[in-house]
Image 1 (spheres, rainbow, N blue to C red):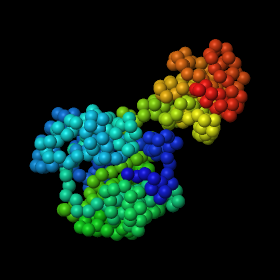
Image 2 (image 1 turned 45 degrees about the vertical axis):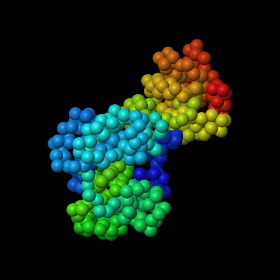
Image 3 (image 1 turned 180 degrees about the horizontal axis):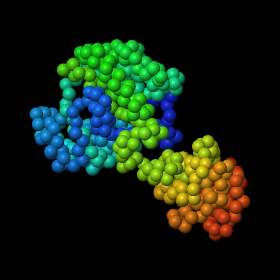
Image 4 (image 1 turned 135 degrees about the vertical axis):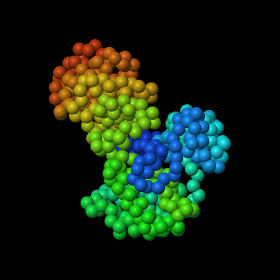
Length: 421
């Protein structure tokens, strides 16, 4: 839903990940059913729904939660967009279906435990561990609503459009004049005037204007109190009974706020994330998987970016962004090597350390211990410079390991590329 356009409307914080990892840094992503539950707590209108993880739970939910519904919406739950147009590896087309009540069990059974591939998951897809059963609403109008963080105005920005149900990029291309942007003063908070400007821009056809203004204010309250980096509702819909309803929602939360949002961060679903990134997070390492062949272990984000660039310059492709930070322990270095070698695509590893706070001897000891534990089967190129560099080089030399040493970054990158050819 939120793709390139929101990045142009408000500066993006995209990861340096490869083709399939175009996602924000600084964010916790939660499932749709979790987002709906959170919004409901804030008094925001959402469709009635139940998340289920087994066929038996589906049967019970249909009886108890939707006893009088003739049709029910069955939504697969994965942390990726484009579910409706996705395809399951078992052949089922579409991750979202509106079906008759008596067909819900069969349809949900075709989704649960299966791999759904969408334009955002990449060819590997994601497993559907839960499906979300929702009431089928009678919609009379669909609109678009989002709140993001905007660098230009140094605060939250509400983006809304009187048309919705399709991607914001398409809306911006077809109806640029219909998109409104309302910056919110982070110190004053949202005013009645701000909320009214949003509602008037949405131009609801049947929903009460005052109640709609209150809904916008509640959405902003959720955004601030829950430390969101993005809140997107597409569509924000009007129903035949004159209600304004968040018919679908995507919520991201700032990782820096994990210490005060413990309940929210307990919702994290590691089964939907790259297992290497999960392992890195547990070891307090900064890791993003890419699609290349040369695994990189570097200290400092700037040096990591430079290393990736120079690998490309020499004709290679980086397999990851891995920053062990300025004060990594020997144990973290061992974990870093385990993560690097868990990637089957990695044909060589480049260690590029500039010892400032980080000491070269600590890195060297970590490399030696990692080699013993992991049984390295790929060439390792090491470039060490800075604090305790002589001790570090001596540790590596005396280890008996077959290492390729380099004098500078250019030399290291060239040797790493040659090592895989």
